[in-house]
Image (cartoon, rainbow, N blue to C red; front, side, top):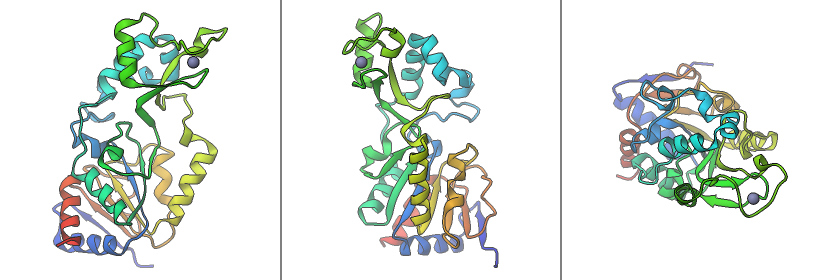
Length: 267
Ligand SMILES: [Zn+2]
């Protein structure tokens, strides 16, 4: 089979046209998003030079650290991972619009900021959970992060649930609903991954936005699309998929590129 791929660094009109036409005909787009779409809303990413991990080692976002230092954990998480002031950008908005138009089937995101939902997207899989809420590990009571913030201001043991009683206090900890290292989230389960792989196989188009596709299992998802299904990657950096079959790569801003494509779809 002839290899079809293109790497666009200056948004060559030709490849933009190809991408736009592919999107025009798509009816079941699965979108994979990473930190790069949120940085355009002013949210720090994790792995770049100025990212979260330049402030603290990865260990601070582990389940072990959470159990050992719940107060410090909360302080760090709320300071660095919680962004109630951030607003969705053009990229988020256009994805929500495409969902309404029946083009986008599902968004699978690594982001924990809830910006896709705030833009209006309905079918969103938060693969790494969300920073908007926290849950008691014993009774399952759900707390909003705003509620946790006010508990932090007024209570010494704010991270211990007072809706239930357990023999071991550790069981009563209220944990943010983000997936930590050493943690299992809803979508990290066998059933969760199987559901995602089914979506990948049903996709007639896969759009990757703002992720370098380096961390498994998320990075493996594009491999499960059917043969011949196009893959478009809009990301500032390179990805291991850049020279794959039926793959188009745009090294540009997500908002700007999405807007250009959307304007061509709706002249
Ligand atoms: Zn509880």
